[in-house]
Length: 323
Image 1 (tube, rainbow, N blue to C red):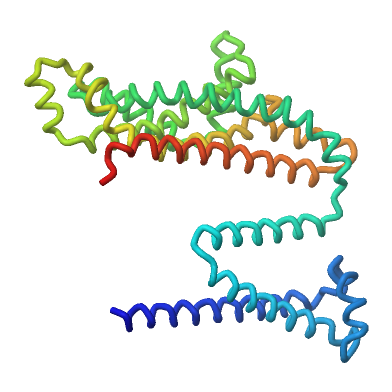
Image 2: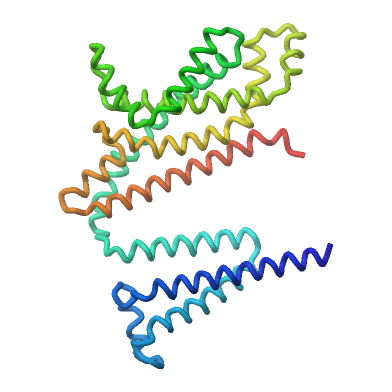
């Protein structure tokens, strides 16, 4: 047992070493053009006082990076799990910031537009996503019950619904609803069209999630409820669904996060959500990259918040199942 543990530790150390070596090799290759980037301006003064001067700048950068990565991996390996995760997160986030810093962005432009993106774009995005997930939840419940019923008509309608809306790209669904319904004599607005498309599409995916969650409950639960005189709907609402929510919530939370990002597709029909504003606000001054990076950061921040809410819900629903 002890030898197996030591062997695993040695394999882990070797894996770390090989990973560092691979990173160093890649860095040495990338650094071939360091003199032509913003990093070259930082390295050149240092390289001037080192042996070989600027001619060996790539070599010194590669060696310095190798030393830094080796020391970094060694120090991280001595931390506990939680601190290790936090440290790696901070380091990777720092690399992202360094990557974006090399783009020569106009931060004053970003700050000038940030309030408008949040108050108009983020609010509209959250409104559309919240409305869509609520409607999709109802559609998924109806669809799952229909697919599990003994009624052939209900099964056929539900299976057709899930097949079509999972098989057709969401962008096409948005266009079909926004441009197709007016052909029937009813003009639909951009936001209702976007909400309808998102609800129908994600309702189809969530139908299968609900169906799987309901089917995970043993059949004996239904039979026990029937023996107590409960009808099918009472059994479903009072016994089956409360138990299946523990399995339904995690994938449903993932669907909500995915919907939050896919809501950017409704920008094609003129909805003033986050992606639409990011494209239009940077157009006049040709600051498209600033706005796209800002939108990406806001989407990521919203996703992190939703992930935390989902984690709390999962822990709350799993309390009665812990051993």
